[in-house]
Every structure is written in C-alpha cells, then in structure tokens.
Image (tube, rainbow, N blue to C red; front, side, top):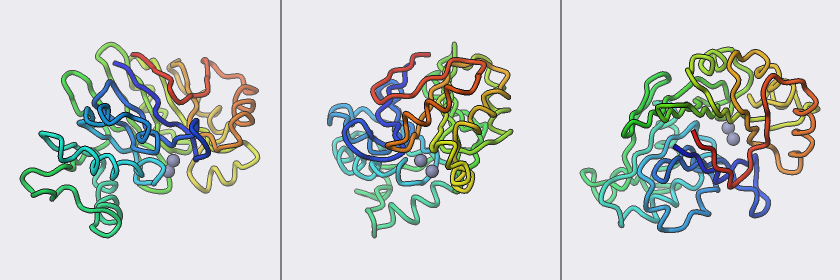
Length: 255
Ligand SMILES: [Zn+2]
Ligand SMILES: [Zn+2]
C-alpha cells in the first residue's frame, strides 16, 4: 500500500501549505483538509472512502466540495467513516442544509452521493485486505487516529492529539509499525498553548517517542506555518530512539 501526503500543514499560506489530507492508494482519503483541492478531477472521481479523525475544519473543509463535485458522476455513494460523535458533529454543523446540503439524501435516500458509516476504536474496517483501524487520541473534540495495515506492515497516523498513554499503548500493540505520522503543532515556548489545545510540542512529542517500545520511522506533521524550522530544530535537539523526519506535502510512504 502507499500513502500520499496531500496536505500536512497546521495552517495555510501558499501552495506548499495545505491542511491535513492523505490519499491511501487511489481510493481512500484520511481526512479532507485543503490538500484535497490539489487532486485532479479524475483523481477525485476515484475516491470511494473517507476516514475522518475529527470534525475540525482543517481536517474536513474540502469534503463538502469533493462530494458536490463528483457526486452525480459516480455509480455508488462515497462512504464517510467517523465515530458516532464525529459524524453527529458533521451532520449537525456542516451537512445540515444551512452550511452545505445533506448529501446523504441527494438525489434521494436510496441512491445518495454520500453515506455515513459509524466506526469505533479498535474495530477494523477491511477494504479488500487493506485494514483501517481507529486508534485512541486525546484532543479538544472527539478524535481518533488510524492504523493502516497492508497485511505485511502498518502505518499509523495519530491525528490531532496531545500526550496520551492510551495512544502509546495502541501504537505498541501494532505488530510491525513501519511509519508513524504524529503531530508537533507548536514550538516548546508555546507548550501551554499546546496543552490547552490538546496538541503536541517537541518536548511532549519526545516524551511520547521515548516511551514507545516499537521503532518506526517517524514523520512530524501539523507544524504551524512560520514555525516549522524552529519546531523541527527543537525536535532534533532531543535524543530520540528512532529516525524522525519532517512530513512533507507530496511525500509517498510505502508499507
Ligand atoms: Zn484539531
Ligand atoms: Zn488539526
């Protein structure tokens, strides 16, 4: 399997700064931030499944445009996967006929452009042998991460989360974790803000990585625009037990 980084910025500001969206193979999206907008129309038509970590706009903003753009050209609905809490937020506050139409009833309930599927932490969704399993996360709103299993190795994306022993335990339970995408939204000087907004900064990230028993390649995501170099310099100053890279838009991770 492969994961292509469509967006991994903690904000906007030019073509290199799209918000969180990952394309898995060519038919699965994990999160639907502004990175989705750079896919061609033909690529958009291939997306059958969208897994959402949480309802914050930087992770969902382009899903309404995607569904509206391709819905009438598709033979079957796009499936939007999220926890019960996250789907409730999206249905109440986004696909609510006020901000955007409810595409689960368009053109009619029997043949909609979009269908919702509830998922729960620990319960794998199997898409032709490719398994996607929601993992715990600890953020200001209900949130999950995802483990993606190709059958031979796993890639994990922790979504937006602050330090969490539960997250560490879930990562260590993966049998062959090859790639770990984890955030560091703020520099260490803003640790108070990182904790208040349930994000990570380099010191908290280092604490998590040191407590991990597994040794994946680590990719740091969700860096605040203008603070990326500083955040990565701070991460690099901690002695960490595994290789740590900055995640970049356009990167392809295979597993
Ligand atoms: Zn968030
Ligand atoms: Zn975010």
